[in-house]
Length: 375
Image 1 (cartoon, rainbow, N blue to C red):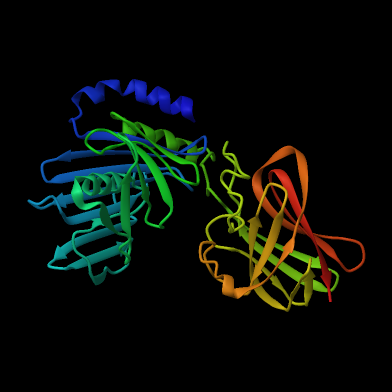
Image 2: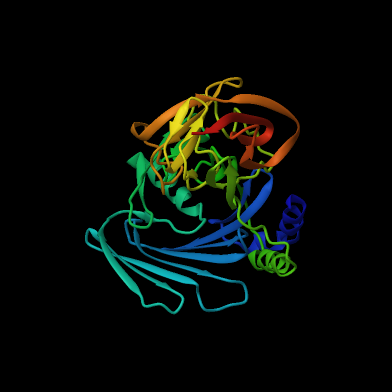
């Protein structure tokens, strides 16, 4: 995919000459895979940002900002549509009145929903955009030290700290740390996230050409698909009926153990919603006794050689919402190196001798296992 991107950037070099000085583009990659292309143009009191995203299929996003005389956002319009279609899948407008934001959202032909919430001097963010982070960094470095986003109905504060002449650290809307290189005006040159998403600044791109190419791939059955598809499995071990559900991220050239999954930090075992397990019989998972019901699973890779499986009684939660007070217990895992890497993260349960089984966790060049007994 990087060859295709490079070729298109070179082919669009003429457009860069005619682009305005405050126009730019971002190439967004997850590991080695290009997941989206973004560009923006700022002129006077308006900024128009556009994105072509690829997952699970090609979608066009547009975010239009209006600014008041003090440089604060006075209104936005966000739309999302498919290539070749004029009718938006989603349209959201935000207007500010005093210390309130009036948010109107319409999905397809459904009636418009109106929401009013307390919010002033915020930067709305929607879709897969990174331009709002550039606005936030420039505002924070202008003296405020931080900026506030408006994401859905929440208002996360983006704290920005300069580290050296041309770098800053900041948090995203989920309070995850990011690091960015910036120019003398505070504009993003390169941004890196803990998930190894990288955002690289370019002068200009032919976004329509990218949209056509990505849509053609979709039509040929070669769409990118979900970045971390959900996997649901049903297994029978002895007299127990078991159910597993988890998000399955791919390596995409990223270092996994000790990199994407740091040692010494609890991990949600997959992506997006937490990994879930359900049983209709009492289980003994390693040293942890699990009564019939639905639970979530987490992983604590303390070191490269010492991992623990964490069983939590909460369910229907995001993998970021672990509550240690709800933990049932932790049990040690047995680690086995693999000769060949597994691109996809996998959880499975296989029968073993007698009425037992083995729960396995596999990714990259490592498999971790723990025995299961049915009581």
